[in-house]
Each structure stands twice: as C-alpha cells, then as structure tokens.
Image (cartoon, rainbow, N blue to C red):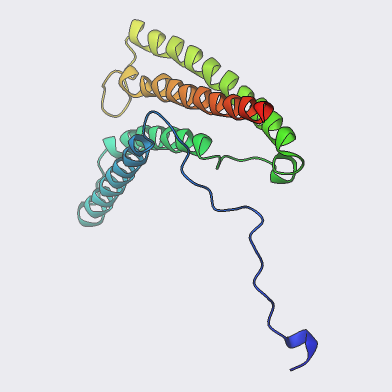
Length: 180
C-alpha cells in the first residue's frame, strides 16, 4: 500500500460532545411539546390527505391549525436551541480565540437574542390585544384569532427567560474564572 493509500488515523473532534446545560426548568418541557406538536401535525396532515384522496374534499381547518402548530413548534425548538447552544451562528468567530473572548461574544450574542425576544413579546402582546378588542376571527373556522396568536408572546417570553438563564450561567462562569 502506498503512502497516499494508507488509512487515515482517527482525528479528535475539535468540538467536544456537549453535555446538557444545568437548567432549573427542565428542557424536557420544550422537547415533549415539540414531539406532541409534530405528531399532531403529522396526524392532521395524514387525515387530510386521506379525506382528499377518497372524497375529493378537504378539511378547511387543517391549514389553519397546521400553521398555528408550526409556529408553536418553531418557537419551542428555538427555545431549546438557544439553551443547548445549537442556534445559528458563525462558528469560526464564536468558537475561536481565548475562553474569555468566547464568553464575551456569547454574552453579546445572547444579549441581542434577549433584546429581540423581549421586543417580540411586547409587540405580540399588543397584536393579541388588538385581535381580542376588534374581535377578529379566522377565515376557515371562524374562531377568534387571538386563540392562535396568544402563543407567540407566551413562547417568546419563554425564549427570553431561557436566554436570561443562559446569560446568568455565562456570567457565573466569568466570575468563577476571575476568582481562579
């Protein structure tokens, strides 16, 4: 076997396997919420496909419910992604340099995330109040639209609280590092 054909030696991963972050409120809440929402979405869609196939009709409410479920599913997934540090970022910038630099960049990043989701919470509360006051109803089912919209500020507030927890853990890590 020539040198170019020799099997490569195993390489250590640059990023070690992450452990579950120490959180006060279990991440299983969002995990199970995502599982339940995804299963419900799959069942509703499957039933609609069957009804369309056999009757050439469709359930009018499935699209409306599916959009609602997808929004809540996205927000639940986003909440867990921020805590587990699996959110979108430029890793060459975020994961390079000294641990102090990485922590500062993580705090800046999480601070921006917190500002965005606090603003989203406030503005979506205003949206829900407007839908409630003006008694808007959904086009397909005719139920109040705030029934769907109320979950946006709830989930945005949950992400805000999760981000505050991440910032606290980062600050605690900085204090422990400074004490050494």
